[in-house]
Image 1 (tube, one colour):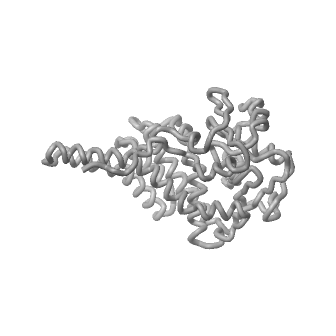
Image 2 (cartoon, rainbow, N blue to C red):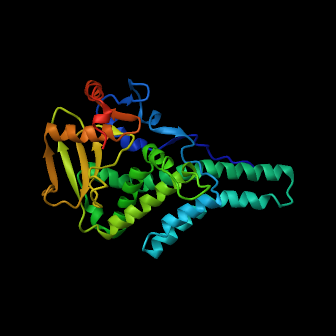
Length: 316
């Protein structure tokens, strides 16, 4: 028995369909900061790593660290959901441990090992692809400046979970959590970063859902000569997390349209806003400053001028 399903080795942490909006309105360009290179390309060739979603075997110390974090939630259903996710990531390793004592022919053992290895490398990528496919109509609605789905209880759950995952699942977020100090002896933050990213996304989505009537979607229309850019951190929080627990999630949708999820009715008094060049630049600087390595545009000359600015002056 062998696995005939494709092995998705090149796994994306920014949705290709999302980035396609910058490819259909001009030449899709990427600026890669590590080697200071700007080049035309395609969405499928960027924001990806080899087996980005591959699961890691957790030690007892890793599990204790995650359990301590999960236990901080006051909602028991949320705690149970996050514990189930941790168990799911470790299922293949538990099955492999049981196989050690099973009396199996070498061919059957090898085939089962292949299936387990495939699951460890691909199920995370399949999970995110499923979420994105489920929310493609929501992204299409946003690009048509429609937020009707947000007023439906079920679809608002889908949207808020999707948006939170787009915020937390990226290389930048994983890198940040991989480098945090740990108080649990034997715990390696690099092993738990991907799981913790998912737990953060689940917690934030749940919080936003509880407060969904206070938050609303505001569309930013861009009629200026400057396009909105996108980055390998596609969703960014425009507020300082050290100063407030509120969120202002900015999500560029296309070169001429973006959205903000906000509870600030004073700053965003209307459902739509026609932004001026200064505002476009402000949001673009934020996307660039909080990117991990790559930013994208349909305007090569603008992108070149943007990256001439020192990134450390922009990061927040």
